[in-house]
Length: 462
Ligand code: BES
Ligand code: MN
Ligand code: MN
Image 1 (tube, helix red, strand yellow):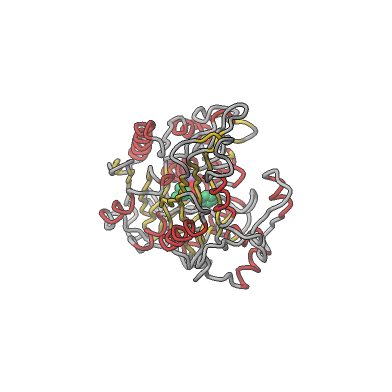
Image 2 (tube, rainbow, N blue to C red):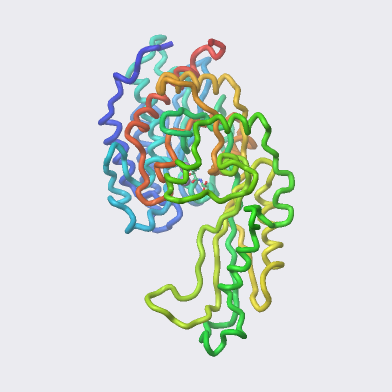
């Protein structure tokens, strides 16, 4: 196997320029106005992978396409399926961006653009990792040390509605020994990380209806039901003052954290004060009895993600709105089932709604929580690769985010997942001024190349 130092062969400028081209495509999956751009981003990856000798295609789905590509020229070696997504979150609020979201720019060593870290930059790092290996050539003659397949989707940010049937239809073709994903954050800047768990998600919208029209708040106030007040009462009733969710049955079957896991997390280099400082707040409220990392990674929670109703314009308008609404996400942990949790909140909200209003709880997408093993030949290979790049052993961390398709990798493809996240929370995914450190992009390319080499090497070596 090749042991050469690949970092001296890395075409840093070329890789960055190419990533910029990809970042210029506004592939926002949530907004139908950008549908053609989502297709363009898919085509962009297909063209790039084809230029690297992959058999590559763009497959249509009922919504946004899937890119599939393969290079199977390492007979007898493992097959690695690399998953990523080329769709991005909406850019709003546009006025908060220092440079436009789809005009990438480097400032202070960071690439600023929507999708830079989530997930175009991380997915593309693997493409350049493969390219680096191909440019180097393998000592044993085979072009790549393992067989490589890419599965890149355009619907991750909207809950992957098309990919489950896609996996079912292409299960044979997608067969692999391991699925490699980089779509999240390392524990800290100098800490390489293997992620071994994701939270699940249940996402609902609460609609509250009062009178049949907006009303004069003087003529009707004190007698007419107020849907905004009612919504606030409902929301206030979803959590208690200990930070616990009050929906009956919500915590049933929640897998308790083991002492071993709590100890492992407690030993990670984390500071609550720094964490609070990094987001500009004075304290970190949450469920009593659990540390911040435990609350983020191992405990479920409920958050309002959006709320509307009534007059929001300049000055004041004396009015009682006819309707109000809120979007609510619940992050789930192993033991909880998104479908069941959605059912529980649908039963509970009408029960706690005050009189005079009608409520409706609409189900959006969900995702299963996941937890993986922390020991396998693949994980050991990842640790060796990360050690070459970062000079130290990886830590094991879970994440508070969700990637719903991962459950289907287990259920449909029956394939183990290896999460080697390349970004940082401070990259601000989904926020204005999302970025990806140039250094992290380059380290990502190297990590990918070394990891593919390690996966192709004898798994049992030290
Ligand atoms: N890459 C994220 C998931 C993630 C976020 C991992 C933070 C680690 C840390 C992914 O693109 C994402 O945003 N997922 C959504 C899922 C939803 C749209 C179904 C999420 O977690 O909100
Ligand atoms: Mn992502
Ligand atoms: Mn995302």
